[in-house]
Length: 450
Image 1 (cartoon, one colour):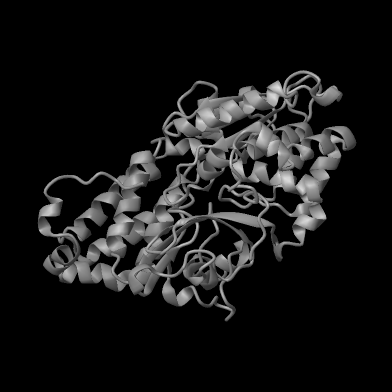
Image 2 (tube, one colour):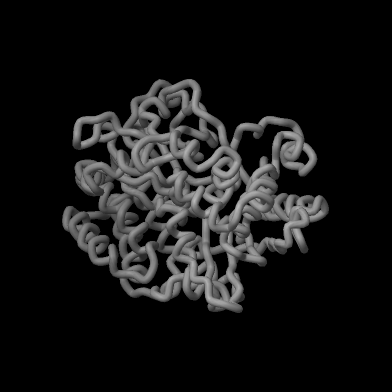
């Protein structure tokens, strides 16, 4: 059984309320940090924990905090990135829905560590129920004396505000989020300067994911060294995984990092195996933006070891034979799923969500969508596969923000591992259409599934 640090009390009735959360030991981390520790002590514990950003990039959280500039007389800000829009990822929504006070507690601890007196939680605009839930939790915490002026008599002041997102995937990129938070169009900024130097309103700012901020609560309660004992190598602690696709038990699971991928798929404790007694075909381990892995690369890494749920193991061999932990959006495909159709669906999403600033992304994502649709609907040629490969290569690494890479990687991996399936669509167009979907299905445009 894996340890539960974030979801330990998730099934306790009323855990979304302050009183019940407090009865289960909630806000102990705030009391410990504000009354017995300095901001530097809190940062040091997070560094000791080895916590890496849980939003996708996996950058060490304590190190990121250490970059924050501290000029005299200039405010600092903490911004929580709750703009969870990655297809296949829904763990932050789950956390905010069921146990919002762990996020609020983490915000207080983290804000104290960073010297921020005003902090923001930016939540995806479509998540109105979660926005209301988190706003209620903030109000309850403030009424109990954990927010506002002179918190717990320590002299520390903090206000937290919730900001609904603008309904754009691009606002999950931290500088686009800051632009949106300032009331502007959510376009990513050119870096440098980085937010740690000039972020929100031009002031030093740290942007962290919901899960990353919530994880500071058990780190402060138990100590960074204890947290680091969970997991292996540089993948320490627990991780929330959004599991979906052709599995028996989809949902959100908290795992110890280091769990074998196959155990996560087939164990009754987690996904419970492939639905309808089908065979495993492929896996997207970290949300739609990471490379797909065929079944033969899931059981073993290039070094011959079992592939594990860690940042290092999933990336073993680079993108030629590996993938990424990403945001933990774990999407499983059985033997009947069409990789071409899935890749087209992802491409449609990224084309729709491109902000349009960079020509490679603006033009390239649309081009890839059209070519994939052409292949999927029986009108493609072998040359189209090579053209797709060339387009994704010209997008990757040539844009201001990572959305271009996020659009290119799924296409590259699909061609690399499933080129024969692309060729089959081209040489057997009528069979490809009628086998899975029926020709009439393509008479009208299909709305993206995200």
